[in-house]
Image (cartoon, rainbow, N blue to C red; front, side):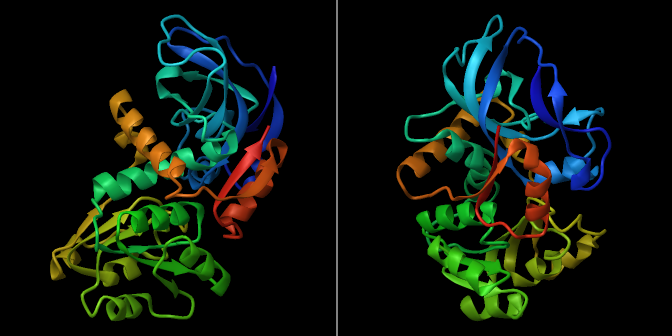
Amino acid sequence: MTMAVRIHETGGPEVLKYENIAVPAPGPGEALVRHRAIGVNFIDTYHRSGLYKLDRLPAVIGMEGAGVVEVVGQGVKFVKPGDRVAYASPPPGSYSEARVMRADRLMVLPKGISDEMAAGMMLKGMTAQYLLRRTHRVTKGTPILIHAAAGGMGLLLCQWAKHLGALVIGTAGSEEKAALARAHGCDHPILYKEQDVAAEVREITKGQGVEVVYDGVGRDTFERSIEALSLLGHLVLYGQASGPVPPFDLSRLSAKSLTVSRPVLFHYTASRRDLEKSAKELFAVVESGAVKIEINHRYALKDAAQAHRDLESRRTTGSSILIP
């Protein structure tokens, strides 16, 4: 038996229950991981609320964790007992002291990456990797807009994009968050509650707009994102923290020949080859110091409900983790 946070029904943070569960022995191709730190992400709130449907209830939620391999099943070749590993992968189940995972979803951590860093960066960091390097390839001078620039995802995107030489514009909800974004590579923070985002973007880009918008907010920012884009611009909608975007008339995109993407990390890391490429590129930029992982909020595993309340109320910056 082990302690875990499980839901028996979908709803608000109050449905998260800290309780004992049974953990099976790893089968062929699987490994038992003892968690040392667990990542908290918006996708966890989607599973908890029912926005993203789970296969069955009750269920342990959570998609990201770091820890030590205790036991492996038959045929495992990627990890061995004693390895420090991390993952950001379905199925949900990371809100637990220990769990069984497919071994081919685990990445062995280099010495320069701590367990807490790994738990706070795998999902967001590999998301940043595919957004900037594959969904829309950012290069020197590319003008971009990042919504929620002071959040965990935003800080990673700002730093990595700046490392690539982009012109980084970001939105933030307060002067404090704007300063945080600026300190992490955002050239032009915009206070979206006080300023017209599209107008500010046009001024910064001399009337052109940005080549790409990275939007993890969704409903509340979608229109601003469309307005901020240049001709042939690309809106990358990778999340919906404020809720799903309402039905949209695609013919509106023809005004500037825009494109819209709705990418998902787990499709970009579906193969072992792509997972290794993404994770290793992330490890390299973090170990080089170009991207720093800010673990600004730590909670005991039993306090997962409070972590969700803080995340959904936008009281957090950087990454949040649970400690078993």
